[in-house]
Image (cartoon, rainbow, N blue to C red; front, side, top):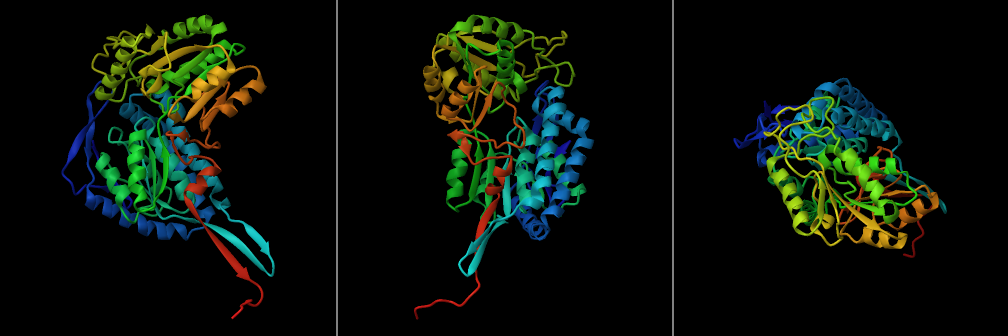
Length: 487
């Protein structure tokens, strides 16, 4: 299969002959060839997006909303097909792709489709005058996606942008080129004007071209902190709007009165879902010393029962890491943990067979790892690993764990488990993180804003909060009397 650009309403052969092979993480077999966009492709995408923007912004919010709602219906009607593409592209279990990835993308389209008619300004009654504000679209926006949730991220960026009247050029990760094209086709079939949602394929060079293009008004990135800093610097030269959803090293705090079984469930979800390749993961699990041993025993037992294997098998619970290069990076972190004095309690090795005895040595599989005897200063406790590696640490007091949890350059997410509702809120209010949970973890409904503090990003995605990041506010003063002039 050839993954090309989707420009002006159709798959388009790139004017560039450069391409690369896209591999299935589960077996490293080729999935297809990806065509690298060049400056001519970007220019064509911008021209197309500008034309679509002028058509789209003239529509009412209700008209725009109907297109988004129809596109959501199309995604849901193709759930099985798109979920399989996602699983083959990312390496995550098909059960996840079916339950979360495609459905959450459709949720975003439905949410913003439903509220598109409600984007409005404010009225101000003034002395012999009145004023009002208008939230107006920015123009052509660019979205740059990550490889862990390709279609969800594309929809999270496109839905609010389009609901507000903008057009979008989206660059998926070069490792996962497939499902953004499915979203583009859904928009077209739903009645969007050609060019409203264009897809350009490529590596960081394509991202740089989008950031540098003078007719692109906004950049929204989901990616690493290092990439986010480059984009922020580049966008600043033209004062572009920027939304950055970056990495994390988030704390999950388990107090002594917590429901241990629920807390273990959350720790597993916070570290091993999608092979641990989730930016908001609670990879620093702080457990009160009174329940540390019992918590660890249950955590170890349930971790070792995780069914790792063929991602297309409905019974599989954990799949393959995105690439050989990334797997080797995660292994280096595991080696660092061992060499720094932490104890590898379980996992952290490449298995030869999956849970059904099938040979999986050709894929990027890694058993879920738990480190104990950890110290806050260790690399595995400070750096984002983005793989199935859990570090568990003990604590004695509320004040102590809050200070340790906040001792990080990141601030994307945090979780607290306790049956003391006062303590739950009290602790969450002191944690320096933008997305928090009490007695759960990694639940991200479209109705709630998502984003981070500190180096975990700028701006918010999802919810009504996203509207301010895809509009610019115009103030209008209307005089009802004569002009009072001293001249």
